[in-house]
Length: 133
Image (cartoon, rainbow, N blue to C red; front, side):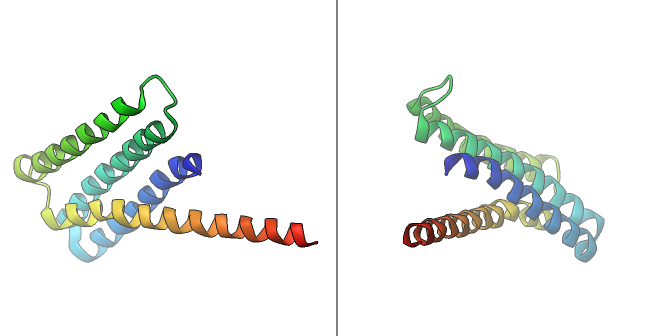
């Protein structure tokens, strides 16, 4: 299950970001669309980092231990906040567009979870049907 989430979640976030960036360009123009593009890139990279660290926390696999991975998750959060602040306050990313692009993180993770739940329910139903037959 964790392997499926690791590969699916960043894809869903990236796909959601593409849709939101397209909408931002169409509805908000170049400035809002560019801000959404920046936010979408941040959201996709954050989704990849979250799933990579979560896998190491749950399985303990790899070259880092579970405790170190949990600590890195906290460092990732602080880094995300610093990057968002720098993009908005220092480099002038459009706040509305950036928020729209960053929203892909929440929507994409939600869609990935729903998709995984549906797949697991279908697999359980298939296993139950095979056991009855």
